[in-house]
Image (cartoon, rainbow, N blue to C red; front, top):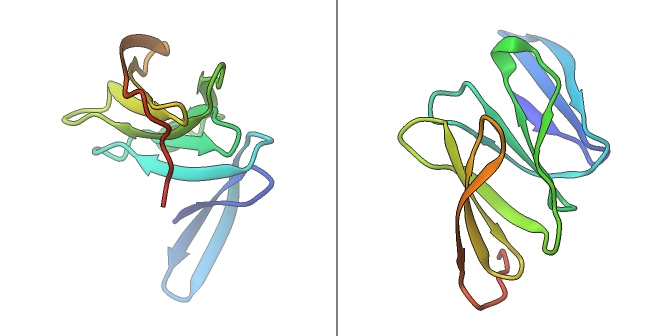
Length: 120
């Protein structure tokens, strides 16, 4: 079980029966607004309240790596494009939809919806 705390910490609970062990996986120093696993569960996207997107690979116990940084408009949400886990799509508050290559954070495509986006 993965979850985040307001302080920007990513936690993992290893639950076995009535016993559990908690591990701190990453500290990104920004409150995390959403966690999204890739379809193969190899990569976890972390989207912060400030609009930055990080990747975390649980099997490698690596630190979270900053993939996308909010620039002119905060990322509101991100998710993987399936099948696979090589690409993700994001949307900004200003309505810009972008497709990203996860290996190096290259923006491959953009579409401006010309409308402000909100999450309900």
